[in-house]
Each structure stands twice: as structure tokens, then as C-alpha cells.
Length: 113
Image (cartoon, rainbow, N blue to C red):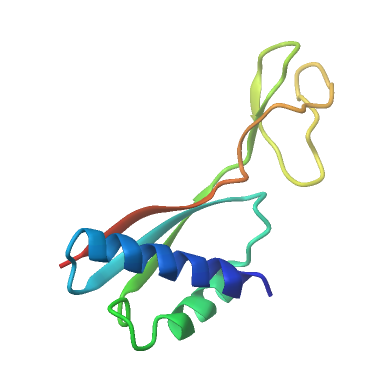
């Protein structure tokens, strides 16, 4: 379950940024995660609840914002939604290798006191 190592890194970064900004408590951590990132939300939530025990993040909310997977056809310039199995342009039916969104995995915001 790689979600644990992802959350351990998130907690490390959040604690570092909270200290830089002189927070005494973190109230909310917001992540942006693309549909193609291969991350299970339930596992992330479980890992988060366990990794924040005893830190200034304990009791905070983990907000996960899903990012739709979008590609752009290099031939007809059409943007369209994709998934893991279908990356064909709906207009010209060519395979698309230009993925605009969908692989994101980052901390979007940190809120605290």
C-alpha cells in the first residue's frame, strides 16, 4: 500500500511548512489527486488518520480534490476526457499521447492557526 508512504511524505511537508509559517495547529490539509494517479482515497484517509497521531496535524481534516483526466489530440487539437483504458480522440480516433491533467498528486493548501 503506497498510500502510507505518500501520506508520510505529506505529513513531513505539512509539518515543515506549518513550522515555517509559525502555525501552532493545522486544521485542514487539501490534496489534489488526478484520476490516473493510481491512489486509493480510502487508503489515503486511513493512512492520514494514523500518521498524524501525536502531531500538530492531529484532529485536522484531509480534503481530497479529484482532478479529471484530460488529453489533447495533437492532430485535431480537441481536448477530451480519458481514462486508463481509453485515450483515443473522439473526433479523429487517433491515440492521444498529450495528457493535460490526470496524474496530479500534490498538496494544494494547508490551513492552520
